[in-house]
Image (cartoon, rainbow, N blue to C red):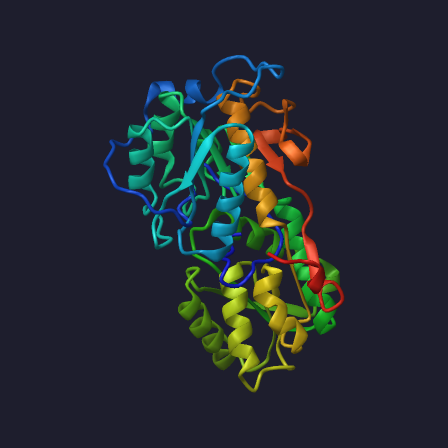
Length: 361
């Protein structure tokens, strides 16, 4: 997603076992690279699932977001922490203040030392966190990625906010509908190595190849690093460098809010269309003053809630992460694990002036 909650991020999707560098604050520690650890792959799928096993009491889990100061990540993680209380466990959020590729590694090492039952991570980089995550699995610590995935072999389950393909393609359609399918467009992403952002962008680029979008040209992919000020400056730079720009897609809650703030106070308001992923509370002002017509997102609270229950089901032996296994996720009901250990929360919601006041997150 990645998405931030200073400004809500648009709907669309859940997490990553090796990329949870989004936002958690914890202490450091060093660990050897265990990419060659012979026990790690076996640990990922070891054991036989017992769907009737009760959830263990007293489970200790930790959320490791891309960055702890990301408003979107805070909503996700707080919901997961609250869910842990429902099943008699305890949870916390730890993580870095920046979303660099390796910023989450020391936190993973510390959580291993603290013997948590499960680590839930929104990965900043799908590969940078793999070594320590494999070491965690070798020590029978379950790994759940959410929002931004790790490499599949580095986690047990990935909780995806929505289908990555659906998110990417729907973003293009949303913008095309607003600009009449014609004009230069740009993408304002989070970090260049963010797994979820890059996957969505891949599907956006593929969607743009369709004949109905032949009048639209992607001229630039910019990166605001999920930093409010940098995203603001990148928006300014895009509009100055490409005077014929008709639209911007920003699939990150931090980026779309910063872009909206710049456009709102500039000569481009009403001339350049902005859409992407944001939260209703973050984007309400810009929808109501006409800066933004519509954007998307899923409910981040449900994302954190589902990830928390998945971690509990893994730690209790109800599931191992294999395709076809099912588990109960509290108020969200029964969920089924799909291909590559992926569990999809559901389709994103489009927010506009007609419905935005019905949502508060």
